[in-house]
Image (cartoon, rainbow, N blue to C red; front, side, top):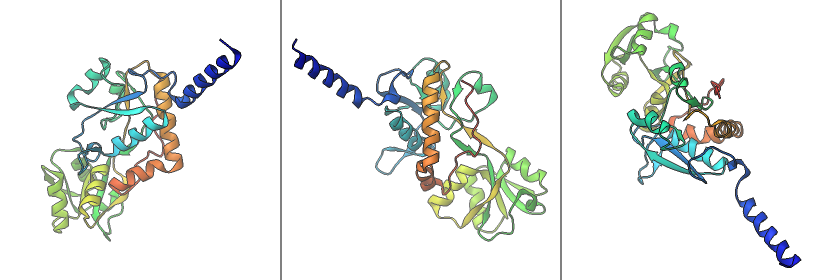
Length: 262
């Protein structure tokens, strides 16, 4: 082979290598070039179908952007909730994005990314309400799901709690003026208020806290590290807020994310 031929071959190899993002190299993924992500596809506003039939939702948008930033093609795997952890351990996909709370018990079985979304209980009130914090619930009538932790929080703060089988019924009663407030999940409340154009707002403080994380099979430190960096960069440059606020009306990025244990 002549010197010119060798030089040309080297240049071609270099050019091809340049097309593969460096961030995708060395990641513990099941199939080259793909990030296979387990999601339900039926749990709004986390994962659902857009009017045109495509997948949409908080976790879909965020994970699509994560995949792009680490140089992989986002590849959804639709699976029911009960099978998520079994499928992860069986290497059916690389990561679970399905609205999974970070708990100490789950951390024994999987490695979570840093917390990517904060939720928990918040108080839904009509716009202009005098209720600003949980302390203001004393003597008020508050709606919550029957036998839920939110109902207990209302009782603990001196409210008369009216129980409902569905959050939609509680919010309708609030709209009709039959109760003073509703305690429910912050993300669910934000989504309903935004999509149904209801004349409500939520108090600034949370009455309970949870964080959600993307779950990986243990033993994938480089993939976890890459996802965490992509998440942090998205929050820092404002992309995360743009992707999420459009669906629920506020930015749910944790101010102090729970950190990965691996």
